[in-house]
Structure formats: structure tokens, C-alpha cells
Amino acid sequence: MSRRRKKWLYATSGITLAVIIALLIAAAVLSRRFEPFLRQQAISYLSDQFHCDVELASLKVHLPKFSPLNILLRKGRGTQARVDGTGISMRYRDAQGLPQLFSIQKFSFVVDLGSLISDLKIVDHVQLDGMQINVPPKEDRRPLTNASSGPEAQKSDQQSTAVLIRQILIHNGTLTILPKDKTKVPLQFDLQKVTLRSAGTGRAMKYDADLTNPKPPGQIHAVGEFGPWAADDPGDSPIKGDYVFDHADLGVFKSIAGILSSTGQFEGALSSIKAKGQARVPDFRLTMANNPVPLFTKFEVLVDGTNGNTTLQPVQATLGSTKFQTSGGVIKHEGDKRRSIDLDVLMPKGNLRDVLRLAMKGSPFMEGQLFLKTQISIPPLSGKVREKLRLKGQFQISNGKFLKSTIQDELDKLSRRAQGEPESKEIDEVVSRMKGTFSLENEQIHFSKLAFQIPGADIDLSGLYNMDADNLDFTGTVKLQAKVSQTMTGWKRVALKPVDPFFAKNGAGTFLRISVQGSSRKPKFGLVLRKKSEPDSARARTSQK
Image (cartoon, rainbow, N blue to C red; front, side):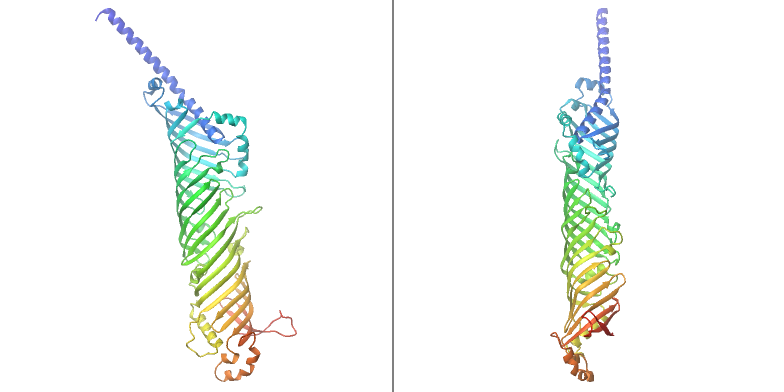
């Protein structure tokens, strides 16, 4: 090789090397500038998307090896950069005293640097750890609308950063719905794992979520659609989906227990959701009796997340083999510190065994068919549910039969005497019928009417039963088909014939006024005579059995 040719070779090599070094230096400088650029883009996007003031503690861009030259020559296309950051905080604009809308402890995502110079910036995957979302009541969110409706907000919207995030993965997050009453505990959901997949900008994202329900505690798995995000009023952000709710412990509520599982669908917004589905509690029980009875329900409910109000529309339920319907709600009225329960219950053909098994300790003492129509009210007062419970309604028991032989034997004897055949063994295992109108308040049941019928006898009573003291205080009448003398045998039957006319009145062979005192376990029955010199309300108990 000639000397001149060698000089050209050396010169060309030197120039090439210099150009390469210059390109590497330029590319390295350019790559370092991606960090502040990405930081500014991230803050701009979040600020525009959520109408919030955004703070970002740290952001770091990690480039693959030998990428600076590729960045420069291909304008970043094909270069996948990993971005890590910490401490994102987003607060409502011009809304003093409100908590952060979002806070994120850590985040990371991978982005093609070439897409950053495009009108639509695409991010394939974002991972968020320790994300907290706070949705305040609608009244507290009003400043957002005012803050985002002026010229500056419109300008920001026009210059907003267009970003398409294809997938978001959230770990260990919380969603908190703040109540109107600042003294109440917020409704909080633990977001164990949530995956969001985009269907395009400005459209709802598909989600798959695992979360923990606050009360009753249990695991929820839900899939559906969420969004688009309502920046001016986050509580109005639409959401819908299907859910499975398992292992919910009802023991957190006073007076009831059991493990609930439920499936169904829901739709609405973050602050107000309508749900319908079915729920099953195989071991449902009232703690005062602790007798498990399977409970199955089909329901439609409307839940206001800002105040916890729940409206039933209505609920179809099966308790054991008994079907009934309930409607109403759990509502916090203006001025009340606690929510009250107001329900209407209709049980057209209930199994009395099911109801008694649920409500009483031990085995049921009676069987039959139960009709029940009642209003249930638990006002927002302190104290036990039993002390607050209010009922008002009517009931009817048909084909009733006492399962304890001693009680049934006494009814059989009464029916024989009432029919004028005290020694007939064919009158046995008689069925009874009972109906009444009642109200309950302050642990006292007032029966304005309580009628009891067995073959040959009608008993009509009114009075009070004190549940706390187990005291009976009833008065009423007994009508027997037979005359007084026919209720007896032998010489007594003959001896009482002269007095039959005195007791045969009001269409009955025998008409008596009675009182019932004592306790539910040991009732005491007595005859009541009215004296002419006393007002109708005066009564003198002359005998007790």
C-alpha cells in the first residue's frame, strides 16, 4: 500500500471515529434529556386527565445498553425504556380541606421512546403499588366544577397530552368512599389486585379485580368495565360488572351470624351502585337463639356509597322452606347520627317451624302455616337491637299443632269439653288457628286482637306481653259450642243444667270472660266477673286455675 493511500486511510478512520464519538456524545446527552421530558409529560397527562395539582417525588429512566446511538439514528423508535418513580400525589384544584384524590407509592412502566414525539403516546403496561383513591361526597366535590370550567381549564384541555395506556396493574391499593357525615367511618375497599385493559382513549376500560369487602368482611372477585373517568366529579365515574362474593362473616353485625356467599351483577357510578343477584347463608341464625336455618335470597338493591344508604327493591327470600318478601331500606335521615332500618315484610305461606327455630332457643314447640305481614323499624338509637326493635302488623296461623305433648293434650281436653263430649277419645290431635294484630315497642308486644280457635272453642284476647320480664297481662272472652253442663260428666252434668241459660249468650253455648296472667312458661287462667256498680273497665278476678 502506498504512503499516500495509507494517509487517506488514517484520515478517513479518524474522521469516522470522531463522528462516532460525536454521535455517541450527542445521543448520550439526548437520552439524559428524556428524564425531565418524561417527567413533564407524566405530570401534564395526570393534571389534564384528573383536573388535579400533581406532585411527583422521583422519576428515573432506564435505557438498554448501546441504545443512545440507536435513539439518535432512529429517533427513539424501537427503544424500550423502563421508567420507575415514587411518590405521586394528586389533589383537587381550589378545593381546600379535601384529601388527596390519588396517591401512589411506587409506579413503573415501559415505553417506546419513539412514541413520545407522536400525537398519541402509547404505553403498553403500567404497574402501580400502594395506590389510594379517595372519593368525597358530591357536595364537597363542587369546587372541582368551578375550577375546571374557566378559560385556563379550557386551554389546558385543548393542549392535553393524548396517552393510551393499554394495561394497568394495581397491587395493594385502597378505594375509599368518604361519607357526608365527617364523624362516620368511611367505606373502604382493599384492592388486592386490579387489572385494567384499555379499549381506546375516551372509552371504558375492562377490569379484573380482587378486593376485600369492608363489612361484612369477605373476598370479592369482579370483572367488568370502568370509566371513562369523570374528572370534574369522580363519584360519577361509571362502573359495571359481575361479581362473586365469598366467605362473608355476618358475625360483625349484632344479633345475627352466618357465612354468606353471593353472586350477581351491578352497574352505576362509584358513589351510587345498583346491584342484583342472589345470596346464600347456609347457617344463618339469630344469636339470641343460635339455631341455624338456611337462608337464600334474590335481591335488587341500590347503594349510595357517600352515606351508606341501602334501598331494597325488593328482596325475595327463602328461610328453610319458607318464602317471604321484604322491601324498604337502611337509611340515615337528616339530623340523625345513625342509620335506621325500615322494612316491610310479607310472608304469605310460611312454615311456622322455620320461624320458631330461628327465633327461639331449643326445638320449635308448634307447627303450622304462618301468614305474616309486618313493618319492621329499628330507629337510630343507642342500645341493643332487641331494645330498639319496633314491629307493627298482623299474623295468622292455620293448621297449628303443638309439638309438646302436654300442651296438645290440654288442647284436646278443652276441645272435647267445648264440643260437649268430654270423654270422646276420637277427638284427638286437634288443630288450632290463631290470628292477631300486634305492635312491639320497648320490648313490649301489644295485641289489640288475639284470636285462638280449636274445634268447639273460640278465644278472643287483648293485652300485653313483656318480653324482658316474661309477663302476660291479657283479658278476653271464651266461647264454647257446648253448654256449661255439657262440658262435665256424671252428676256434675246434671247439677249444672239449671245454670246453662246464664252462660248461654252472644251466640255461644257457654260465654265466659277470662284473664291470662303469669309467664309464657306458666300461664295462669282466671274467670272475670263484672259488677254492675263498677264501670265496664273494672274487673274482679274471682278464680284462677
